[in-house]
Structure formats: C-alpha cells, structure tokens
Image 1: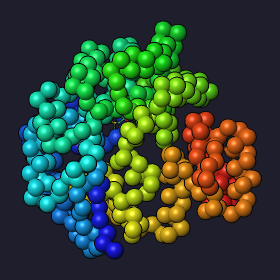
Image 2: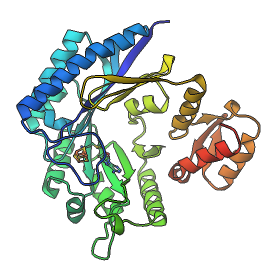
Image 3: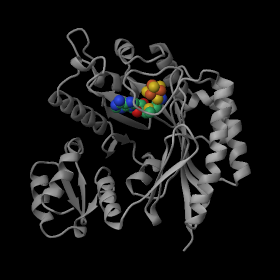
Length: 368
Ligand SMILES: C[S@@+](CC[C@H](N)C(=O)[O-])C[C@H]1O[C@@H](n2cnc3c(N)ncnc32)[C@H](O)[C@@H]1O
Ligand code: SF4
C-alpha cells in the first residue's frame, strides 16, 4: 500500500512585535525584503531534505486535504507570500485537493482586503483570527500591537464577507480589582460576527512573566474554563478537543489529524511533522534548514496515540485496555469526567480540564 502525505503545516516565523506571553518560535524582521528572501530560501532548501526523508521512507505527496499556515503572523506574509507559495507548490508538484481545508492565521491589524482576496484566490477557505480578548485594557496588558478597533474591523470584515473563521481567545489572564475581564460578555459580542470555531487557551507562562503575581489561581481558572465551555455548548458548539469548540461539521480537520496521530508533514523553522506509518517524528531547526528526526518505538507510539486521542472527541477504546480500566472508568464517570458509548470513552469538559491527571490515572493503574 503506497504511503501518502495529504496534510501539511507551514510555519511562518515573523511578527511585527513580540507579545510578552508568547513562547512560539518567531522574530521581528529587521529588513523585510532580505528576511523574507532568507525564509523563502530556507523553505526551498528544507524541501530538498524533506524530499529525501519522505522518499527514503517510501512516502509521496497526495493532493493536500489540509494545509495550515501558522505562525508567527502568516497574514504578514501578504500577497508576496501567496505568490511565493503558489509557485513553490507548482514547482514541487504539490496540489490542493478540491475539498482541501486551507487555514491561514490572521492577526488584527496585520492584513488588508487585497491580501485576504489573494489568499482566497489561492484556496484559503478558513481563517484563524488571533483575538485573545475583546477587552481594550486586557489587550494592552497582553502587549498586543494592534488596537481594539483593529480587532473589530477584522471581525466585521470576516462577517461581511461571509468567511469561515475561527477565533483564538485566552483564559486565565491577569486579574485585579481594576482589571476584571468578563470573557462571557466578550464571547457574546463575538457571536455577532458569526465565527464557526473557537480555540480557547489557558495562558501558560513561566514565573518570570511580567504579570505573574496578578494571575488568577487554579480554581478561578477552572471556573472560567467551565463557564466558557457551558456558554459555547449552550450556543450549539461542540467541545471536541481540550481547547477547541466548533459548530457541528466545522471541526478543524487539520488538527483532528494530529489528534488521530495521522501523518502531517511540516515545513518552516521549528515546525514538527509526523510520518505515522513509520513512527517518524521530525522537527526543523530554527536557524538552518536541517531536520532532527526521532523514530518512536511501537510502545512509545501507542502511548502517544492514546495521549492524543483522549484529548479529543476521537476518544479511546475500552477494548484497548486491560479489565482494570473498567474500575478507573467507573470512577471517571461517577465524577462526571467521562462518558462511554459503543466501546469508546470520551472526556467531558470537566475531564478535558484535568486531562493530564486522568492520563496519570492510567499510569497509576499500570494501564499504560
Ligand atoms: C502561536 S499563536 C499565533 C497566532 C497569532 N500570531 C496571534 O498572535 O494571534 C497561536 C495562539 O496561541 C495562543 N498562545 C500564544 N501564547 C500562549 C501562551 N503563552 N499560553 C496560552 N496560549 C498562547 C494564542 O491564543 C494565539 O492566538
Ligand atoms: S503575534 Fe502571535 S505569534 Fe507573534 S508574538 Fe504575539 S502571540 Fe506570538
């Protein structure tokens, strides 16, 4: 059976400003023209190493069913980026399936009508908007470079053009008597713009974070997370992964590939890919187009598959576990952490919140 790759993540590593909480690989271009040229050359060179990697393992490209351009701030790549990538794919014989889910991350204030039109003409049909908060004060605390007007202009544009889009929000943000954000009111407001999907991340920072002392405690964050989850589910959204909610049928197909441990190729500094038939995980070095590969053992891969599947509506099969699992499961069900249907165990919102400790349960019972 031929081994085919039909899913690609592309990392665009530039931002116009570095937000104080962000740990992703990114940099500010010093000279846009030269830095983008260097990035393009990185992609060209890494494609050759990638070709060697996949061909030596017997893989070939199939028309892409999912393409995700993440960052960094990919909308900054602009029309020039679209032109580059279109040629790049043409030269490399990479095509998009007619139903390809093609996502582009967009930052408020870092796009134009022309740029969005260009990417749409190339096939982009899903946009992920980095909103984080609709509270003007919070936007400042988060050190975002755009204004609240940029945020609303962006939402307005995507609504007006009837585009399929997701919004990113963050929870567990700095808190004080003066600074008391209502994320539910923010979500209510966002609904006026008709997003099909929400990604909701709990802020994760180190203890040297500038507002570390103002971060709310765990209990507070848990309540906020469960309030958000209830609100979105009451609006008809499905809580289909720890941090993700969608209208029915609007789940991110690209991210589902990760949660199902399917092959997803990756290009761009710091991007990580998986060739699942051979259990090969690889990561691109940030500063040179070189790859670091790791071959997981069968046991490691099985563990990882469970670890990923339990985090999403994919769920885990009872029959994959020894009988002792039934004891663990009945505890989980009693505590409203999981449900069971047709041999599949899926976590509830409460379960997603403590997914790591539930995975620990599996270890404690020597089920993993
Ligand atoms: C890598 S960012 C790229 C998106 C885009 N550049 C932006 O800023 O909106 C993807 C998402 O990760 C989330 N994120 C970034 N840093 C985070 C952190 N320290 N803790 C939790 N979520 C974070 C934000 O919600 C962000 O939208
Ligand atoms: S714009 Fe996005 S990727 Fe860039 S620093 Fe801010 S959060 Fe990180």
